[in-house]
Length: 342
Image 1 (spheres, rainbow, N blue to C red):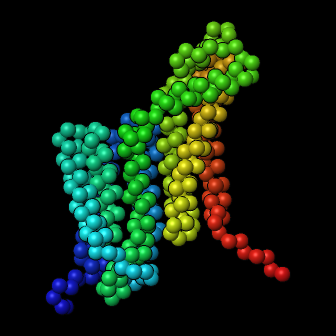
Image 2 (image 1 turned 60 degrees about the vertical axis):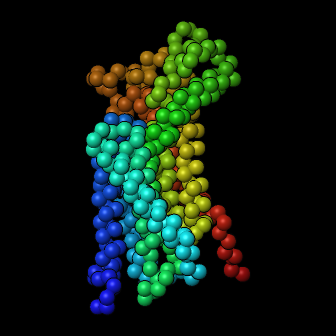
Image 3 (image 1 turned 90 degrees about the vertical axis):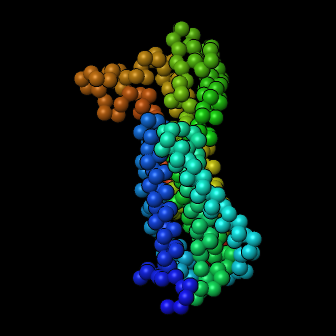
């Protein structure tokens, strides 16, 4: 073995790349531990338990393509990355790793909080993507091409960036838009009721019926739970099932995430509208009973749950069906049609 040559494993990865891989695995385990506190205390983030599994699955599915780029058995023709870009990636890797370290120290000392979670999650994502960019090799240890490096980064986007949905999403988006969603949902639903000639009044997020009964659009009705879950589901479906190379696949995945958010918002408006009309006809208390008017805990209570819970579950199932149906449609966008045989 010549001086300066890194030993390789039977898998073909050199010692440095394998060491960096173990480092990222440890960082992911720590990130899981940090975000577990959110998943176990916030009902809207129950999907977080699936994040480590889905992240690992997507990485396993893409491993052959990623490994080929890391060991240099596959190369994509293009010019090598400029030296300044390589240096920038190295700086980003060190900065992201330092950010993760600071967040981990704060988490261990002070406990859960917005600062540690943001630092840990963004540190993991930045470190993983930057190290992936740096670690790509060309055939026979030649300089990797720019396209090969960015292709490897593209393969790692979902397995690493998905941690930003299961944790920082709460602080960056949830807490910022929940109030606006509550207000907008209340205004839209009340507008629909007025359009159907219902003489209602609105007080804050409460809709008051002509008979004095009222139904409130609570935080659970804001749509945050369906929004966060749909964004996660859309990101996963896009990562696994959307096809094409760069930049087509990236654009399709971004469109999938946007459609996921839009689907969640529209279905939540529909759910709240249905519940409001149901309460108008059967009283607001009926929402906490099943289809037959039986209250929870009484004999004969439906396994489908209360009207309120059933409407939410139906909306989530409908959202999943819509997102799955969007996959083949998005895959067709931008693709040339195969002419029919003569």
